[in-house]
Amino acid sequence: MKWDSTKGKWVPSTGYHFLGQGAPEPEVDGVQLWLNSQSKTGYKGVFVQGCLDKHGAGAKPFQAKGPKPEQKHLGYFATAVEAAVAYAKHVAGAAEAGGDGA
Image (cartoon, rainbow, N blue to C red):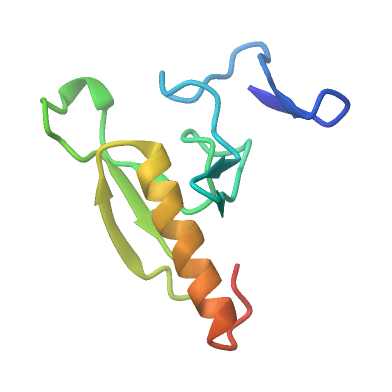
C-alpha cells in the first residue's frame, strides 16, 4: 500500500502489503495515528514480534514502542491498530508534557 495524496487514501502498490491487516487506518476514535509506509505494520512505532502464523488465538504479536531515543515499551497488542493508538496517545501525552513528541 502507498499513500496517494491526490486521492487522499491508501492504494495498492506492487509487492507491498501490511501483514494481512488491510490498509492502515489514519484515525481511530478521534485519535490521529502515525502512518509509516516503510513499516511492515503501516504504523510508526509499531512492530510485529516473530511470524504472525506462529501466534495462536488470543496472542498479542504487535508491540508499540515510543519514539527514539528512549523507545519506551508501550505494550503488546492483538492488532496493529491497537498498538498504533497506544503510540499516538503516548506521543500526544509527551507533547502536552512539553516533550517534542515524535
